[in-house]
Amino acid sequence: MTPVRVSARGAERWVRGHPWIYRSDVMEEGGGAGVVPVHDPRGRFIGQALYSPTSEIRLRLLERTDRPVDAAWWRDHLAASAARRVGIDATACRLVHGEGDGLPSLVVDRYDRWLVAQLLSAGLETMRETIVAALDEVFEPEGILLRHDAAVRRREGLDGTVALARGTVPRDIEVREGALRYLAAPWDGQKTGAFLDQRANRLLAGALTAPGGRALDCFAYHGSFAIHLARRAGSVLALDASGEALARGAANAALNDLTNIEWRQGDAFETLRALARAREPFDTIVLDPPAFAKSRGTVPAALRGYHEINLRAMRSLAPSGILLTASCSFHVRLPEFLAMLAEAAADSGRRIHVTRILGQPEDHPDILTVPETGYLKGAVLRAE
Image 1: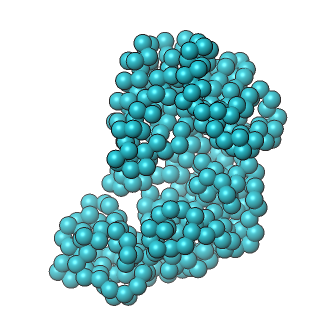
Image 2: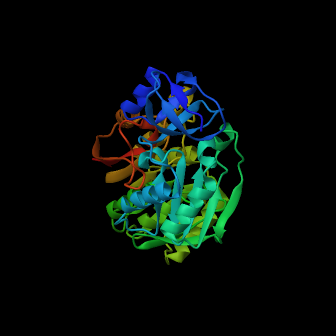
Image 3: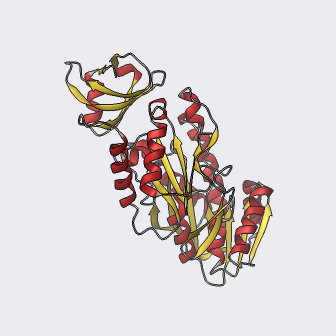
């Protein structure tokens, strides 16, 4: 492949631990997408990168040496990524978290005996068959599904199809999370079939639930939090705007013989206001909304939305009640999120304790020098 020459500023990004070099720092380029050698302004080799010739992110660092990025390279790196997941108490987890595992623009999730993968850059797409073959060899799944319906692929000039790459993959897959089971939807569910990034927080919420108490799960989706709450709570109200999502949640509850969950369709903002006005206290509340901020410019509006739901939840907590609240908006950083919670606590008129700050689980590594790897943040709060 034709070498790509980058500016001193671009080369410095790799030195400082960030794998991306942007279009503005590329001095000389040519050829099609793929893996290319990269040179600094003096022509010195500094590594190999995925090259996307039409992307704002032109280069994504793969290998600092001249070792060939071939089938053996992919097998070694996939095996190393899997080794970092040993001990996870679930049959579904993320096996590759892109830049977090040093494999930029690659996402691989395991659902029991099946894999769902996303190749999210033009450079990576050129290695599709090599990567799929390596996944097949390292993990020996019964099937591999490519969930290429992510918006970022369109920005790379790639198709957005969902395609079977190996074997067969069921429409629904039963997976275990701790002691509970739920159905993932790899072909058409959110993300790659389920929200795997909240696994640890769901287990935590279940452990913190007051035995015999009332629990509320807002933005319940398929009920993954609700079923964990229901193991200990006397009753759970699971709230979501989608009736279809709630129907899948009810199926997940039935899978675990849980009959103490009420599945209510409705707007979370309106329902939280009504519950606060009705002074219906809950011993445990979970707020796990979708990303309110899709860009930096929408952060102020997103923070107002987060403030509103957290304020209403705080006012609905019983004495010593627990609130587990989260945000998956990358553009809302942790300090902003905590500042918003402080304002909501002040407006609630209640004394709210912070008992734990939440982040991403071990299968979604958050790299300090690569802020793009981290997006999930949250807190466990207790009301006096």
